[in-house]
Length: 241
Image (cartoon, rainbow, N blue to C red; front, side, top):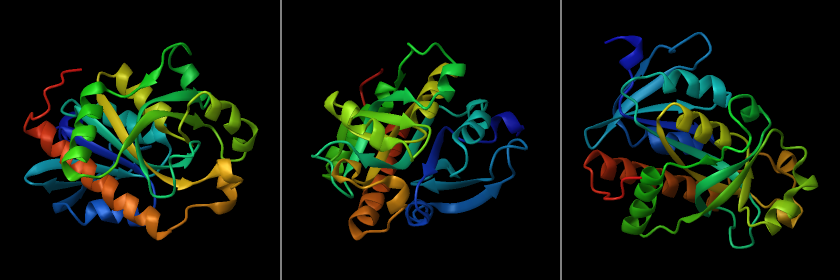
């Protein structure tokens, strides 16, 4: 097996708490690590869920993590698991959102594609997540997020974007969605609400908390993604977007 086909069909990228990453890794069987795909990428772990191979990458700068993955021939679906600050009064700590798109507020993605090209989820992948959440009876919101380049500026623009219907803020989703689209991969994700900046919290002050609601959300997000992968592996979803 060459370096261009050492990853399986399904990949999960995690920008989250160690507890969130462990919630996934503890559910996988036959786990083993593989060497970094290039000098800039991180070591991957591959395991199985109901005999379905899944590769997992944790943390790191989004571009350096995802670019080696995108060059893998066998990779088809990429799922992101992360944390977001809520810009909606209906999304509280521990709630889940599967973003349909992300505002490209990071600045970096403008170097890769025309700023008018939206960063959107793959509809087949998003449909699988929504189907999985329904089957597991776990509430899952949809909507747009905002990808920022920094935590420190969010008070300057959150109210403006909240009025436009943007549901939350995070730091990597636009990169994942846009690059996956440009490389012909199917990307979607689930974000756990970990901060409430509309209520006066500054994300850089609260940091990554481990409230019980957040940890429960991490467990639920993991369950939905694994169920979605199971559905896709057996071609249960009928939406072909």
